[in-house]
Length: 189
Image 1 (cartoon, helix red, strand yellow):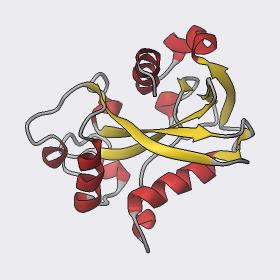
Image 2 (cartoon, rainbow, N blue to C red):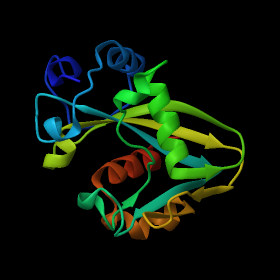
Image 3 (cartoon, helix red, strand yellow):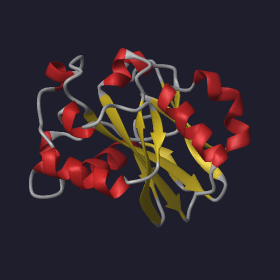
């Protein structure tokens, strides 16, 4: 998606939680699909990344990308979010954003139980070349069961932890997860 459309008055850095409905509609109305290799270093475009934060009661699903992870830049780092790029195939026969969220969820985890999902914020992180070209849509996934497992165990590991329990992993978290962790500590969602 063109950066000039995402940030018409200039970019911001960090996490925002207001005006979110407008962002989802903007993304749905202006989404473009280009080869990832073409836009991975192009500041003229923002790649849309749904970032799903799983919560069961007071525990969150913290994952760690292992050595076999396809994203080399994030290997061995911890993440509070599941998800990834919305792909052009997601647009076939429906809402690309919704289908991208569902596809990423089913690719990464096995979950047994009911859940609800709501957009709680956006992340724009200009602190690294990787994050500069990605816009995170942060969804809180509220679960009625703790029956969640990693699907691709050679690429990821994961466990449910309270925010206080995962504090020891903070410095090993990717930057988006640090931003989300800080927001979860300061807000009552």
